[in-house]
Length: 235
Image (cartoon, rainbow, N blue to C red; front, side, top):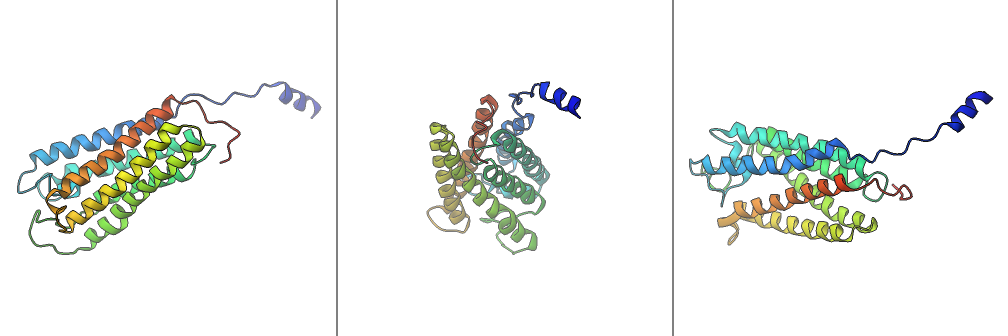
């Protein structure tokens, strides 16, 4: 026992790895991929679809809808993987649990939005607006919680990075969270037929999700460049 203790004491501790988690790469891929697919799909959709008026979710309806369904699911999985890398990169320290958890909810919301199709919105693909069980799941169980969670993720990250001494990113996160939340409300009002937002509801939603994807990309870039957080921080 004495010998084993002496050997253990003489063995130097391995320094913590300074390599960023490869899972953070998923955060660099998800946003550009999601944006590229929905932009192309919106251009070629036709059949009465207008990116200016209609939501991204409506691209999953009708002909070629499989492309947007796959886009939701694949990008949702990438976001969940990124959240796992986020947990590793932020631990230990402020926001190490809350921010990855909230980002995970956003990823799960994307997956659910692909699995459960939305109901017709703003006259597409039909003027009739029947309420279906999968449409309600799309809106209430996945889209709404996902958007709310990502808003909170940005605001929480603002506080966390402020405590970590990253003032510029803290401010950027708070501004992104506020902008994301406001744009989501405007888009939701527009899709509900409230003027003057209805005529450009699709645009408001696209700007909204662009704010979120840009934040995720910059968060991934920041953490991949950063060294591990100070071990003295509390979790």
